[in-house]
Amino acid sequence: MAHCSAVAADTKVETPEGSMTIRAVAGQAIAVLTKTDTGRHLFRLMKNVEKAADQEPVLRITLENGLSFRVGLEQILFKHGMVETRAADLAAGITLESAFHFPVGHQYKDARGNGCTSTGAWQVKSVEPAGNAEVYRLNVNQTGTFFLSAGVLCKADGN
Image (cartoon, rainbow, N blue to C red; front, side):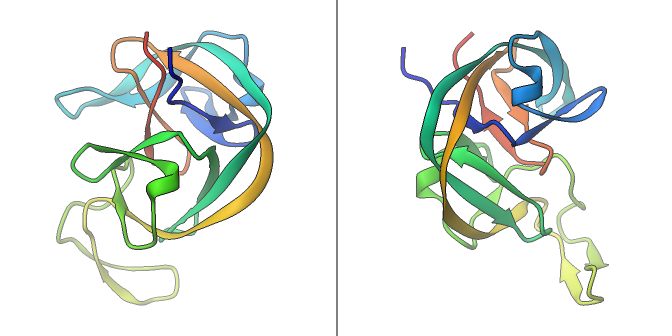
């Protein structure tokens, strides 16, 4: 089976206990924030969290909100509208499906006081090589997706 999840050991996922690195939950079955086909956000069991590789090339993806995360080139993320894309195919300006954002069209000020209009998703600010890292794969019951603590929706391996 091909693996679509490749999350760097230091990347955090959202659990009911708060943000936890993927390395910290390896070998455990733990609830993780996910999204259903109907768009509901809820927690489902993340299981089979295991090391996929000791040293795999990873990318650092930085979002417009200033948060960043590291994943393998083959990690599947969801562009706004639930369109699957590989991390290696991301570029600045692409919007990603997100857990935490203002509704579309909402006017707000960013941390610097600049006026902004929400797109209902997080825009990628930059995608940069981030060396090699230990990466993990995982499964998520029922939905097959999980949110990183940066608020971005990713695809897990098949269940």
